[in-house]
Image (cartoon, rainbow, N blue to C red; front, side, top):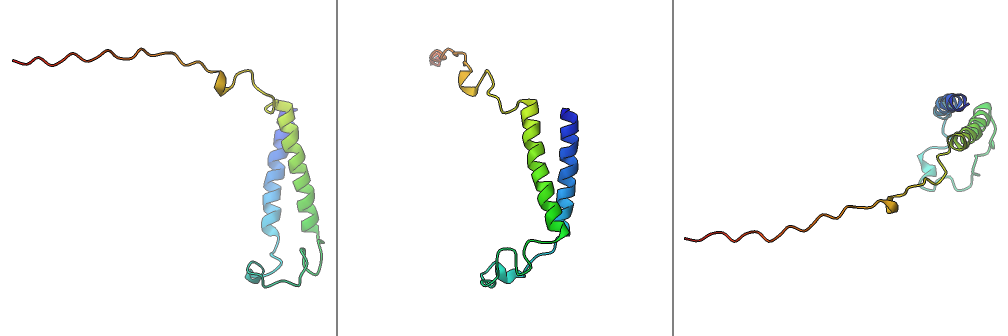
Length: 103
């Protein structure tokens, strides 16, 4: 079951990247600097189009497969040992170095 979820996750990731790259930008660079003040969030056409709907659907599947894989593998559970539980061994301090002999 983990393999099926992971395989679906990888396929969705690749398709999601392709769909995002296929979409064209809504506005030019003026929007970044405040040039498109009168337009709505999704522009005048709204959030329509097959690419936007497919991207939204694949994003939901991506989140579901991510959560499903974490639940299946149990990586979210607290492990029995933490970094704070590690015991360090005591190293004895070195004794004073012998004084050099003078002649």
